[in-house]
Image (tube, rainbow, N blue to C red; front, side, top):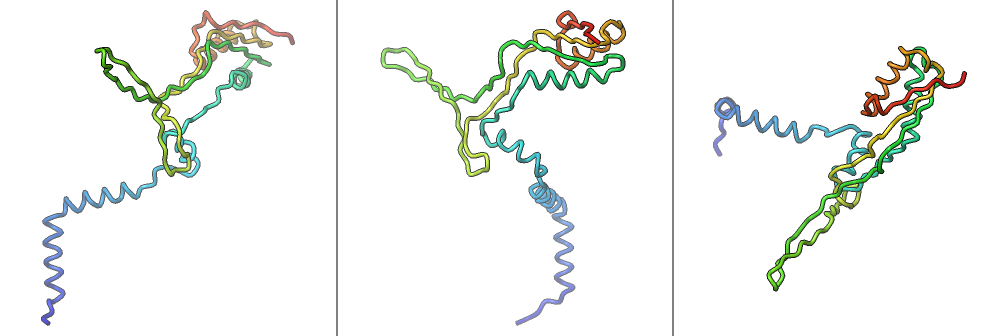
Length: 180
């Protein structure tokens, strides 16, 4: 058996590396992207149900939002103790993916059949309908009661803050002075 010297192998390898360097570079980048982690531990569990098709139920609580808004607005200089009341139109709902099939009847008419798309898999989320969109209720109005409500500057700051956070126009926001 005849042995090929190491230098010959090395020269041939360098020659092939020079010839196919761009192909090898693209392959290397592809492997790195495949091995790249797709997310962190916490974030992955939160986004996994939506990605795998599981039904995601996000709780929308008006009272919790009112509390958060009251807390944030009470930090505005001069506002004092703040209480917020929000009114909403409708409730939250989910839009699920549907598969529609048109069937032609024997009398010449057509009939449309619709079914919700369900994904099943071996993931941690299990199986469930495919969520397309989560719709939240629309705000109709806001009432802000605060001890600093008599000051025009404080009222303006509160009005701008509530408008920015809820998307309501200033004509739908009422700011009143409270007791104390």
